[in-house]
Image 1: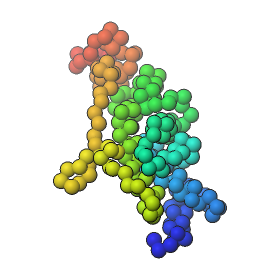
Image 2: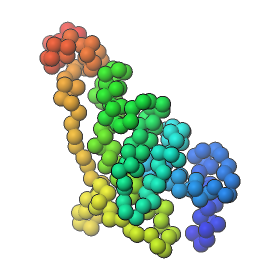
Image 3: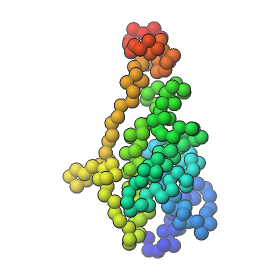
Image 4: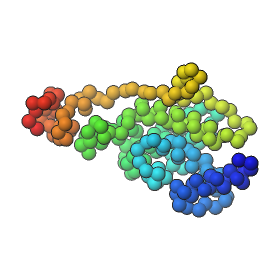
Length: 202
């Protein structure tokens, strides 16, 4: 962009396309920063754009991607809480692990339908923080570049690849057959602590 006016105009157009709202010029800068935080933290995760904006990103993502010192603990907590609300707005769950446990035991969700673990979300949040920092400081001459290798990226052959984290869900959650009821404690096999098999009569 050749000027700040052109940059503001472009970002205003993007924001209005997503939200359908016209913003006063005096809050453009605040909204534009919030826009990138929202998009980077939400992108590729469950939910819709409407849910992403409805989940109160202004409070949950306060300062996200802004610090030269990297991701602080409270920012990570706020970002995970935000993504939990994107998934199920209004839930009392504070972490993805809490939400996963609640969905499994209370909504009878099969393992394939469960949200990601907090461990997996932390890796996503690190990358989102790095991307937000790059986007919001691209025209700043005083910005300090963050090291992507500290934000869930691996370097191989001069290329950055996203780090992949593996952490298994509780083993007893995976013992179920293809019959839908066997994914929950309503299954007699599960109640007795036995794994389902092809001979089950569910």
